[in-house]
Image (cartoon, rainbow, N blue to C red; front, side, top):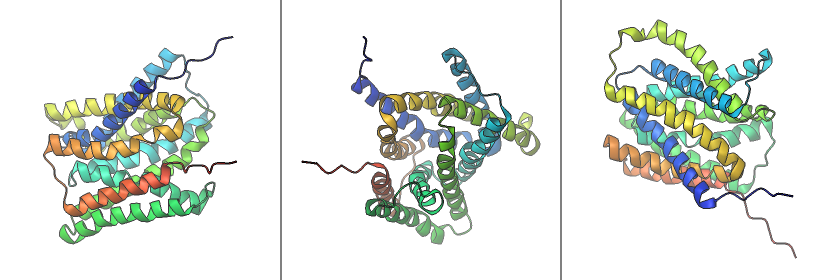
Length: 301
């Protein structure tokens, strides 16, 4: 009888770091992309390219896409929550908000997920530690958005609120995605991306008229990197880590993604964070950690 070999933890940790870097870098890619590509067109291209790549990977793996109408209706709804609404809002918001601040604000999705879970689905207990995580995370968001509201009233605050709405949309998508447990994990990812492209491409054609655009080389390269690396390849790594490290272990990338995303925006975009934003970053990281790191079980005699 043969037994499956345990995963090489050094390799899995390297993949975890790679995933955090790919997702952390997506905000920098978006910032570069929207410089000369309108948000709707940028996200339409992102979903189409990444969805097509995932379909190729699924075909290579021998995984078939569901063909029934009810499943595709769920894919469309998931696409609205997980890509069409949040990605478009983030891309629009990053025209006025630094990529570093976007990274921090967007990292609070586990906090909103927990709030909706307690208020609506109620499948998870509200422990004191998780309540502390909610308070810390919301305090971090208020430190970032609240102070900027007085400094950039009518401009930056609107974009930051849009990014927070995108974060809330991610939280709703996380709850809704629990209904896809009967499918291969890549199926809802590819299906929702394709559905998102079907929704966004016609809107892009009407609103942006892409044939009239003159995107810069840096924006086009950023779009390709965003679609190929931060979306398609990142999904492949994510689904592998779910199998090898489990869902709890894979969530560790959230703690790495925020400082990596901020560091990339500082190095490649020359951005900087205010002292209040640094405090907000610390609060959000502490809050997300308290929400997602499993509590140690008490030792039994």
